[in-house]
Structures are given as structure tokens and as C-alpha cells.
Length: 335
Length: 233
Image 1 (cartoon, chains in turn purple, cyan):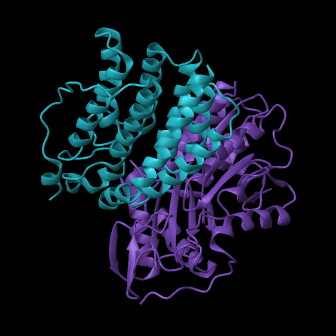
Image 2 (image 1 turned 180 degrees about the vertical axis):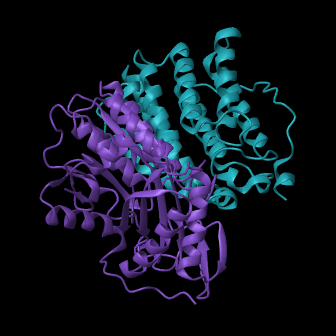
Image 3 (image 1 turned 30 degrees about the vertical axis):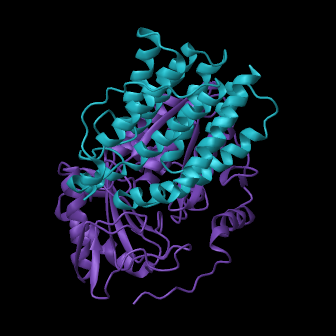
């Protein structure tokens, strides 16, 4: 039976608007562009620096606006819940973050995001702004989904924000920022699972029906069903499924250093994420790989969905330096 | 140029009315292959566009088209916003010197090119491109090669678009939302191709009114097409 959930919302139409105002109230370094759902760093555009921006539907917090700040994003456009921002919002974002050095747009591979970002990019290019793009498609679970042609962009996007943001902060030009962003994409894979569906503010009920004794493997981040439904498994068994899926795709050489992320989908306690991470690290070792850094937390969520995704990114000296560089954002701090 | 601008304003209003009238039909077509939001999103977006162009003071054609495009782009959203609205914004550049048969051809070609690029779709993918491509090609040939009067060229273009809409019924979609259905997309008329036809039909009606003449009776010489109702079964 599906029951309307209790939620800390006022009107469902106002959720994104009120969330953004709440974020700027919490983080004075963020500024909301008037009459938009776009957040930028307060000092944008930063003189002499390539801008790095992102955006997409809301409901994935702290993605995207939570990664705005020194060493990561200069701004991000927020769409409605699980809906792409419109092209004029992306246009406002690009305009506000171009210091004259150009802007790198980090786009997750969803049809709406890609088309609206591309339209906005063509418009600002007519006005003389240089824009480079990188399309993130780290999800190994599906080739085509309800929302994409090709693989979906999910939690690996955070690493792209981090690496490209650090490169831009170090004074790199647009081509260089784009190159390292693409390098992360080329070396990153993710797979996720859900213990429960999620409840969108508009519908007020679960986006798909998942019986108490079943789980979904291969879920995306928009409450869409996964690729496979199975009986409930133990944390170790689930971790093994996800890790094997990711490592099969990456096909890494023995001794390769990696960054791992155990990402919570929004409704799973950290306790459980650490349990997953324990098994993940064991498996990484079994495969002859070396974890250079292990992240655990809610980085890219799907509202209140319970579940987790596992991301693995193969790193070289350049990526290690960029991922280790300082970042000061609401969602990620590296000192 | 204000005469051209007034025609564009009238055309946008006619399109808005038509999409509103066909809203439920478009939604039905979309619910068969997608997420049932095409009718609602398009109706809302074009209604806003009609208001936006009505607010312009004596616009030229380019300004009116660009304003309509920007409004559709931001109000329709999703993938349809960039396809229908964004393409209009870019194609409006071709109308800088007003609307002539030559600039109309350039406008149509740029619009088609933008839709194809943005959607990464070509003919036969079961999308709006299947209606748009034969229409634009027919219009160009009618104007440039056959040197037909503009209204006759537009009439042939609309007939070609209609044949294109029917072409989407029996083929498997390989792009757009319908493509996720795989073989199950066979037998479904594409909502995007359908709304594209409605837009063209309204353009023709408004152009005919403006030129104060009847829509000519032309030989559309459409290819043989399957019966739509039979294919829906």
C-alpha cells in the first residue's frame, strides 16, 4: 500500500525556491541570481579564472549548489525536482560565471540537461563567451534509460567538479580544465542500488513500488526503477554486486590506485554506508587495487531514497593532486 | 517590416490556440510512448509565447520570432523547449531582412538543422524530424527550383509534413522518448511530428489570410502511406 508521506514542505511548487533561499541564508558565500534558480559564488565571476559550472534537477542535494565554492564550482542551476533547468537558467548561469576566460560546463548525461545546456551554450557563444563541455556518464548499470540515450551521469560527477574546479583554481585555461574533467569521466564508473523508492514532493508517494522484501539494483538518481530486482541481500552481498559491476566496467590493471566513494541516496544512515565501505575496501584489495582515498557520505542523493552507490575512479599523479587540492564548499571541504 | 511582425504575432497566437485545442490529443499520443506531458507543456509554453509577442510594440518579424522562441524555450522546458523554442531563436536570425520567399527558405533550413543537431536525429528515427524534413525540403524546392508562389509552396510543405507524420506510425523509433519502447513503438504516431504539423498548418492558414487568398489546391504527390487508424490498432 502506498501512503502519502509526511514531509517538511509547505507547497510542493515552492520547495526548490524555498530550499535555495535557505541555502543562501546558511552560506553567505553563495548568491542567488535574481528571478532564477541559479546559485553562484558571491564573488563570481572570479577575475582571471576559468568558470566551472554544473546544474540539473533538484532532489540530489548537496548536488549541485552544495559544491559551489573555492576549488570547485563557480555556480549551478537548479531545476525543479528531477527536472532539467531550462535553457534560460543555464544561460544566466554561464553569463554570471564568465570572467572572460571561458566557462567549463559539467553536464550529467540526461536528455533534458544536455539539450538545455547545449542551447544555452550556443546562445552565450553568440555573445562571445567561450564554453567547453564535459558530459558525465559514469553509471554502468544501463546503456539507455528512461531519461537518457547512453549511460547516465551520477555520483562520479562530484569527482569531475572537484578535479576541474581545482584545475581552474590553479590558473589553468579552458582547454586544460576540460581535459582533466574528461580524464575523470574516462576513468570513473558507478553503480547504485535502492532499498526503498523515493517520494517526490509533487506526487507525495513512492515513484515506484518496491516490496518490503525486495531491492532494486542498477537504479539511477531520479526515482526510476533499476535494472534488476532481487530479494533482500546482506550488506556484503550488495556491496559485492555493485563493486563487481563497477570494476568489470573499468577493467583496471593490478596495482592501480583508486578513489572510492560510498554514496548514500538520502535515506540511509552513515552507519550503513561505513558497513558498505568496509566490504568495498576488502574487495578493492582482493582485486589487487590500492585505495588512495575513500569517501563516504551523501554526495549525490535521490531525495529520501534508502540505498547507496559505489563509485571507483582510477587516479594518476595529476588527478591525485587535483582531488587533494583545497576546496571549501557546503558539501565538500578539503584542506 | 512591421507588417511581417504582425503576421508573426498572429501566427504565434494561432499556433497557441491550435495546440490548446489539440492538447488532449497530443497528451494521448504521448502517453502511449512517453510520459504524457507533451500536450500540457506545449499548450502552456505557446500560450505564454502568444502573450509575450502580443506585448511587443510593433515588432519586426525577427524580434517576434525570437521572442516566441525564447518563451517556448523557457516555458516548455524539458527536451521540447530546446527543440521547438531554441531552434526558433536561432532560425530567427535568418529573418533579419524581413520575410521574403528567400529568407523563409533560409529560416526553415536553419530551423530543421537546429532540431536535427539538438536531437541528434535524422529522418526515419520516428521523431518530429520526420515531419519537418520533407516539409522543409519540399518548401525549398517549390520556391527555388519550381519558382512557385509562396502560398503554394507552403501548402505543398504542409502536405509533405502530413505524410511525414503518417510515416512515423509504422516505423520503430530510434530517437526520442519513444525509442525506449523498442519494437513496441511501432504503430504509434509520434506526438512531436504531430505538433510540428499543427504548427505548420497554422502558419499556412495565417499566411493565406495575410496574403488574402485561398489556400491553393495542390497536388501534394505524397508517397503511399499506411492508413493511420488501421496502424493504431
